[in-house]
Structure formats: structure tokens, C-alpha cells
Image (cartoon, rainbow, N blue to C red):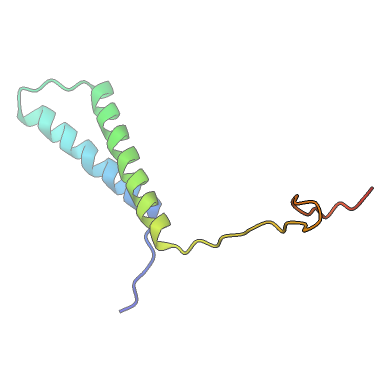
Length: 85
């Protein structure tokens, strides 16, 4: 089976939906008073952390191409394509 690429938008919205449900469930089933602003803040922070982690993991898996600017032997400065004018 071929591995498909990760859909970051679906992951973020799925995590946000699941955490929103967890916050509502916690507030309704216990005596913990979580206001809507606190619930929104918790969900937003968690979604940000998940997005950051997925981005970091994805960036480590992609090969990095290093580009080195050409250096002029005579002057020791990077060569430019502008010419003398």
C-alpha cells in the first residue's frame, strides 16, 4: 500500500474539533467552569502546537538542497549577473 501525504488542513481542523468536544464534555460533566474564551484559548494553543510539530517533522523528512553563491577568484566577492553597467 502506497503511503499518502499528510493533509495538514484536515489534521488541524480534526484536532480543533476533537479538542472543542473534549472541552465541552469536561465542562458539562464536571463542576469545572470553563468559559468560552478559555475553551477557545486552549483549543487554539493545542492546534498551534500540533501544527508546529507536524511542520517540524515534515521539514526533517524533506531533503535540503544547499546552494552556494559563486565566488569571484580575483576579488573574493560573490559574482553578480548585473555586469558593469
